[in-house]
Amino acid sequence: MHDNINIQHAAASNSASSGIPPSPPISDEIIIQTKKLNKSFGDKQVLKDIDFEVRKGEVVALIGPSGSGKSTLIRCLNALEKADSGDIYIHGQKLNPHLSVKQLSPIRRELGMVFQHFNLFPHMTVLQNVIAAPLLVRKMSRDEAIALGESLLAKVGLLDKRDTYPSRLSGGQKQRVAIARALAMQPQALLFDEPTSALDPELVGEVLRVMKDLAYEGRTMIVVTHEMFFARDVSDRVVFMDSGSIIEQGDPEELFRAPKQKRTQAFLERMLAHLTLA
Ligand code: ADP
Ligand code: MG
Image 1 (cartoon, rainbow, N blue to C red):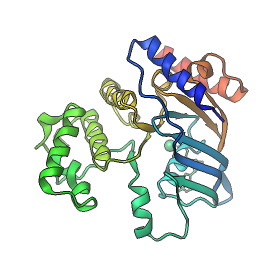
Image 2: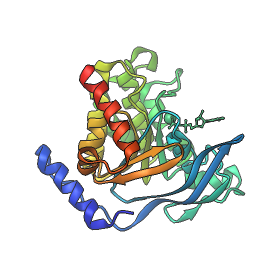
Image 3: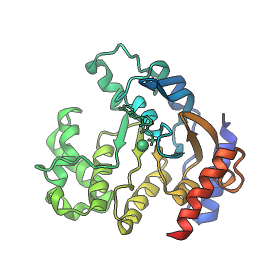
């Protein structure tokens, strides 16, 4: 497991190389923690004794081959899947498998989810999509929700699309709305599961730019991604998973330059070969 000094060093070296001001330091406060998490589908074990933690302000890139268990891990954190054994703590609260949907709700609200497919409500405008949950779940006043929604749309560069319906937006714009919608619940952490994988290549950059801004603002984020440059340049820590286990994790620059495990080396070689061909 990483100690805090290394993580801060990683954040500092990232920004030094990219000329971007250093992001706020990572605190000791643990936002997400799993202990010996196990999950099987039928007789296939998909998560094997996963010990994982994310601190406040930390950006963790979760990488690994398709089928390695990345989505299952993210889905367990948000109680979309139930682990078979092990413990999950979200901001200190235990995700007890016996909790009712109602009891789970305040814990799940701590995490904002952004998926590959944006799942916007087609019958609502962009602004309505962003403020629906704050109005319903957070019981925010309408004026307050609109002000928040507009500020978040400005943040993702889409204030001019406020009254547009999702069907009129490009994939990149839809995903930026989905990010604004996740932020509107003011979550402790944002969980992204391959947010750019469904996008046409020319639309990937605009979404990654928004995510990069959030990272440099000091947001706590887990990003499952195949965007290796994003993982290397923006995250504070890279976690490599294969066959349901965390094989290796650490400083992004170090892990990409000199992966210690054979499986990490093989995966990165495949990913980088693919990049140079593209
Ligand atoms: P990744 O996100 O790394 O591609 P997943 O977590 O989606 O991996 O999947 C891990 C393994 O679990 C895969 O073999 C996948 O087929 C299997 N799996 C995922 N979800 C289910 C499900 N609901 N039912 C059965 N098998 C599943
Ligand atoms: Mg997945």
